[in-house]
Image (cartoon, rainbow, N blue to C red; front, top):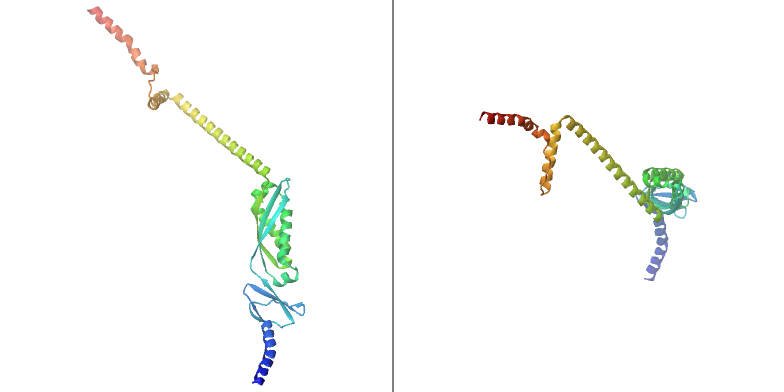
Length: 268
């Protein structure tokens, strides 16, 4: 019985380190990862692909690198635009690792390095534009930021896919000034539209006056129509002179009627 216990202890003493060595030699790499392998301090050319991989314990050291898209929020930056307006701007950067070996060899911490580079690039680019351009041409500025960041991070094995200026915080005085400017612009447009309406109405009235001048009966009809509208809308008595054009035929016949009456009286 004592010999069996001793044998079990010896077996555990031998099998334990073997199991630990085998466990250290077997590495599982996920589909979205790559394993950068260092052998005695020298990097191997090809990173380890996803799956179960074997490394040499105490000789190889593997660094896992994720290839998934990283969304990084750039902290707000105090920026003075070209027209001397102080604004507070933050942005978001989308990037991913395309070369695992370069991301490990070239830079110590590629996430921190990309964050610092994004902050300095944001200040340098937005400091060269006016406030109006910053507010109205976001897409153009985003494309320029993305191009500059991608160019600088390319040696690190980093691909910057997109940069978006997320929020522009203006001073209170500038917001008030912009609100007054927008109100003045709206008033100007309203006055221009009203003036154009008056001009068009005057043109139409001129055309109508020319038509009525060439057709006097149209003027009379319009006159009567206006009187009918006034009588309909207001319950009042309207006294208006009778146009002479309407009674002129009767006035022309009046002397003839008088002469006939005098002739009849003479005969009697």
